[in-house]
Amino acid sequence: MLLFANKRVLEFYPRFGFEPRRQTLFSASHVARPGGATAPRLDLGAADVRARLRMLSDEGLPVTERFGARGTAASWYAANGFARPLRALNDDAWVFAEVEGETLFIDDVFARAPFDLREALPRLIDRPISSIQFGFTPERWWPGAVEAGEDMEADLFVRGLASPREANLFPVMART
Image 1 (cartoon, rainbow, N blue to C red):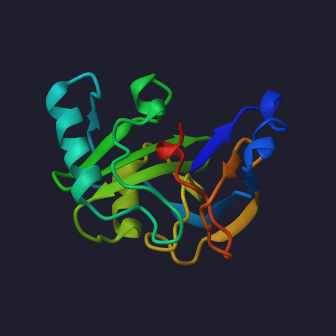
Image 2 (cartoon, rainbow, N blue to C red; image 1 turned 180 degrees about the vertical axis):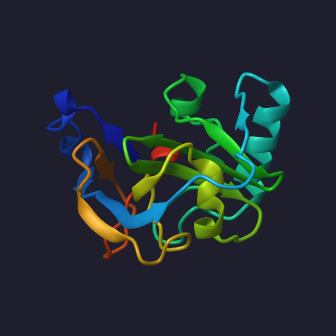
C-alpha cells in the first residue's frame, strides 16, 4: 500500500506500519525555443479526451520503470482542475506540461511507444526555456536528468511495498 499524507497527519500513519519514503525532484538544464506546430491543448471535460487518456494510461508505457503506476488517467489532480495543461503531440503521445518562467514543467507522459522527448520540446513551449523539471522519475524520457533536491510536498508513506534504492519520484499525476 502507498499513500500521500498532508503535513497534519505525518505522525499518524507510522502507528499503522506505514514508513515514510523520500521523494526526489529531477531536473535538467536544457535550452529550447518554440518551433513547429504547437501541440494542441486537450479539454479534459470532453468525454472522448478522457476515454483516450484512459486508454493511453492503461495500454501505454509506464512513465517510469523505477517506481510508478499504471491506469492513473483519472488522477485526482486532473479530475479536480489542478493539472497542468494536457497537450497532444500526436494521437498516441500526450503530455501534461506547462512553461513557468524559463522552466518547462513536465508532470506526466502518456504514450503507446517511446519517442524523442527532446525533439518534441519545441512543440510544448510558447517561449524559450533554459530548464526542465519532471513530475516523475525521468530515466525513460530524459536519462541525463539530475537530482534537484527532495520533494518537500510529497509525503509518501508505504506499507508492505519495497521501493527502489535509487532516487525516485512517484509520478505527480498518479498521486491521490
